[in-house]
Image (cartoon, rainbow, N blue to C red; front, side, top):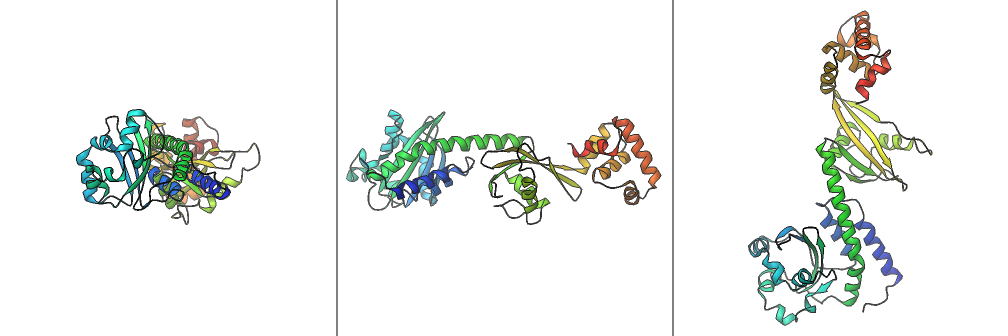
Amino acid sequence: MGRRLRHSDLQALSESIRILYQSSDLDGFPSQVFAAVTPLLPCDFFAYNEFAADGAFQVVHCEPGLPAAATEFLAAIGPEFSVEHPTVAHTTRTGSPQPFKITDFTSQRQWRQTRLYREFFQPLDCEYQMAFASPLPEGQVALAFNRRTRDYSEDDRQVLELLRPHLMQARANAQIVTRVTGALLGIGGAYLSTGADGTISYATPEALRYLQRYFPNGNETATLPQSLRNWLLKPAAPGLSAGPLLVERDGARLRVTLVSREPGGTCNLLLEEKRDSEAAKQLIALGLTSREAEVLIWVARGKTSGEIALILGAKPATVSKHLDHIYQKLGVENRTSAAAYVTGW
């Protein structure tokens, strides 16, 4: 039976849970678990593994990383690892999600005589282990904390038992993030989440590339560019929502849409890029000539007819004639309505 937790223990546990619930995808989740749990459960070697239904390894994440010989051993032993490891074998057979020590099932002397210890754990200098496994729809996930000296205590078991449901919920959250991100990437979208203070809590690689391309100081990946933060602050009054932010650069346009603003202040943003060449193709598909499409793109950029005439090397009257044809073909009456065919994509 573990001891009663002190106030300092509860504070440390709360901090670990906070880190666990930070936004992450499945690729980053093992490292997030390591950062969250090891301050509470110190170890010399951390392992996060996922097994298929037949016991074969699907995910192997270790900190520090495995040496080549250990990796080769895991590849060679395959599903037999689940059979020979006392804790994994027990949880596979019983479905128990509780944390166990290897010494719950065998003495330290007997454990040291096994092939698994001699060929895998001994070269890693791992003498003692606390681990748990929980079922997944197709297999199970297992976390193991290994030490060179001193076996794990009942206090350690209590801590891991308290963390276990949060670990599994955080893993489910990471799976949702992975699926949503995949869906967005599949349609060419880029997505990021930011706190009220502008701190980026999650961003797809494409979203970070857009920030670098379109904003000064966009190379900073931890916080939003100041102009984006200012845009998000404008509709802070109740009932107001931010219209899309449009940023132009080198013949391309970035549209930033506020998808949702959560009660705690977290903002979820969708970033979409469209190049002028793509806009021109769409306008031509609507019946405009290539010259008319070019004129309308400049209109959408806020240029006057005189400025467009200078840019294109044409007369203002010619630009006005192009605009008349554009209005007729699109069925609109003014520049603003026509420009919406470019800015409203």
